[in-house]
Structure formats: C-alpha cells, structure tokens
Image (tube, rainbow, N blue to C red):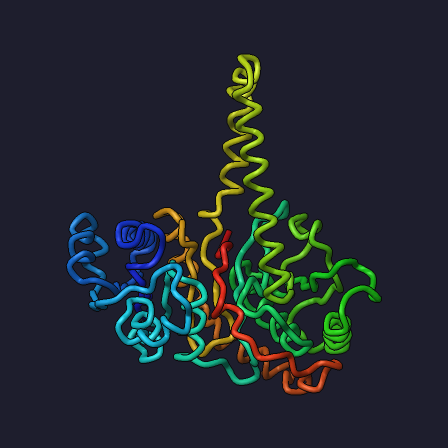
Length: 368
C-alpha cells in the first residue's frame, strides 16, 4: 500500500541535511512504500541524495531558502514560515501535499507554526507533545504533555488522556490502555484541584472511555511498566522527562567509570558486555525517537535535535505508522464517543491562562 508522502524538514537538527537524509534513506530501505517530500536548500539536498539512490527515486525536493535556527524565538520564526524549511514542511501537510511532517528543528517554533497552520481539532483546546519512553514492561509508555503547555486546566488533562490513549492503541495495539495522571502521591486527596477534578471526571466517564483510568501515579513509578499512558501538564512533564534522561546518562557514565577503574573491572566488563549492550540499547534515545503533536488537524512529528540517522529513521517510521493508522481520525472518533463537550464544565478552573508554552521554550526529550 502506498502512503501519502512524508514531508521532511531536511535542514532541522544539530547536523542538518546529512543526518536527516541518511535517516530518511534508512527508513526508506526498511519500508519501501514510503514516499518523501524533502524540504530545504535544493542544492544541498540533491547533493546528499546522490549517496542514496533508493531515497532519491522516491523523493521530490521542495526548495526553501531559509532555516529556523535552534535559538530563534517562535514569534520570529512565525514571520518567516513561508520561506523556511520547517514552515514549508508543515504547509505541505496543510495543503494535502504530504500526510505528515517530520522535523528535528526548534521545538517551540515547530509547535507555534503547526498550531497556527493546522489549528486544533474540534473538541481539543490545546495540542500536546507526546513521546514514547522506555519501561521495564513489555513496551514503552506514552507520556504527554512534555512541554507544549506549561499550565493546564482540568479540561486539558482530560483531552490529553483521550488523545494519549488513542496513540497508545495504535503504537502498541492495545484495546484498552491503562491511563494515569502524574501526581505527588497515589492517594485521591493528593495534588491540585485540577488533577483531582480530572480524575473524578475520568472515573465518572469510565464506561464511555476506550481505556482504563487507574488514578494517580508518582514520578518514581513511571518506568516500572505497569501503565501505558501517563498524563500531566507540560511543565511537570518536561521536568520529569529531563530528570529521567539525566538519570539514564548518570547510570551509563557511572558504569563506564566503574568498568574502567581497574584491571579487574575491565575483565568484569568483558564478561558482562552482553548485558551492558542490552542496557545501552534500551536507554539509547535514538531507539525511542519521534514525539508527536497530538490534537492538530494534521500530523507533525518532532525528532530529537541530536538524533542520529537511526533516530531520524525511527521518527520517520513513527510518522508513517500514525499516518497509516489514521491517528487524527481515531482521536476525533474517541472525542465524539465520549462526548468530550460534556467535560467542558468539569472542574473549578476551566479557564487556564492562555499560554503557548511550546512557543517560548525548547523541549529536550522528543522521543527520548
């Protein structure tokens, strides 16, 4: 089956064209049904494609004279959306020239451009950034929001739960994913009014939901493998994500230092190398790359800025699968089924202060 094209911002990321083209080529070798719209400086893209004839045969180049820099403010990037590789990749989705856009560029700019161009779905107030995180269980968990909205009200959290569950059903093939709200304790009395109100509303709507709501979860339990979707506001989610990334790097560095401390340790490393390689593979963010902006009228996938070609290929594969599985349509169907409008009066604080959190900050853990 031939899928609609995948628009790739070839200029995004720390290393730009080389890694983005290598990643797309790797994805194309693994899944030959992929077609691509490569957006960026035409000469550089064409030159890179000479090393990847298989990708070249399945691609079209869309020239973009400008690039969004990593430290550029979203408000500045928005003014140049019609000339930048990021803006034109998103515009291709809006115009139907591509089914999904993939970028490793500035997260805040990507969110601002995507929201302005694609708009939020009916029944969704704000889009959320969702990613797959490693666990001790059989599969990764879906976590959102990871930085698109620093402040969220009850209604936002409920909508995030519905979108996250739809995402989990696609990527893991689950009929009824387990969903929990991130909190400072598992007791029903813990947390903010918004958290407790969201939990009450989700419990009350349990029979209508296409997932099981299992209450609250604390941050130290996230990776245990007994939950499929963790929902939180972007402020808490981004802090939790960076703490998990830091802990993973700490463990890796500590092991490296321990194994090189003496001759006996080096010998021990040789014996335990299969186990350490498995650990390295499990913690490598490239193997979990590809965060998704959920809740938009179109698909946009964020690759980590420092991702390798393997990481980019993984993000492209995530994009293709969500496109193939009609994620946007499935979220819309879930919202209709549960009567999401009924949640609009839920909670004491139904009007969080408008804030384009993703528009003023860079999120570090896209798919870590």
